[in-house]
Image (tube, rainbow, N blue to C red):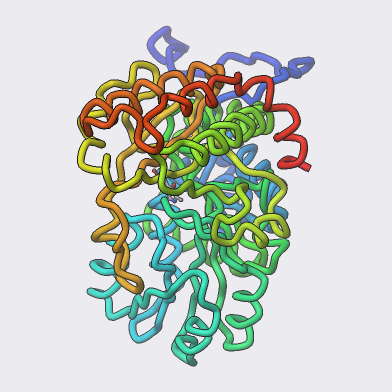
Length: 422
Ligand SMILES: *Cc1c(COP(=O)(O)O)cnc(C)c1O
């Protein structure tokens, strides 16, 4: 063999005795077949077998298997974003003339997709109040193919009664799919609660470091899993094995990251609730938050993502005051190690119950920084708000509020978290 040809052959390196603690990156577009007859029979291979890079390499299988195990499902399919996981699931399942029921509080881009692409395909997308089971029951009919659930809801955090929704939907022959991104399977397992489909935006908690876009769909029924896997393949959905190992790495620290962020978020939420400039805190772990009782029943814990609104007198100054923050970044894609805040307008994002609250809600994604540094940064924001509104101290004008809030959050945390995470 000439050297030119030797450049193209794979040396006979043995994998014997190589047992790494990590999952290797297997890259491939092309899969080799041992002989022509196995190539001819390649589509008879098990769907977990290897036929083409688009349908997955061993690296993909490791991640699919891991997520399937965590969700308690039969099969997982990976997609290049959480959004792609949701939209392609809807495309694969729904036909013209059928109805999908979508919560009013759904992730904004999914609402957009439903109102544009789904409607253009002749699929009816009907929005429902996430907390009104009676209204949902009245929308379910023989054309309803799928009820979508996102719990807690985007920004306003309504926890939905998934088992009750499943019962109603199944009685009408409809499937139930749940976006479980906020909880992750460590804090909620929608398939155990009766859902047929669970989606995670792996870009958030799973990856956990704000540098990968990926999504997953996990199915309880192997037949439905096979159908979706085939549909995703036909549409041409695939992800990079390099990204898969980053998500696999993220999963190894998922539990500790979630616990730490949840503890800090609970302490920050308690502090915000007592703050005179705060109107309302939206966080399922707080008593009084919409669906808190359901959260206690169906969830094992929370994460670092919460929302709050401000009292009327300071609302006009929000955008300017956010520039006072030094530690917390302004940005949307939550679930990473660094704290984020996003001023969010719900005006165009609610149609069943048009939004009549403040122009902006503030969504916080609490990261892994020291809780007191996060609180001190938020204090810069509140001071800037007060300066803008020209009110030295909104509620009583004595400065007592500042004193009251000086106790360190870190000292309070362990007790709080114990009750929350139990
Ligand atoms: C971010 C997010 C998505 C979309 O995930 P991407 O990977 O950013 O496309 C879907 N659902 C929820 C609840 C999200 O927060």
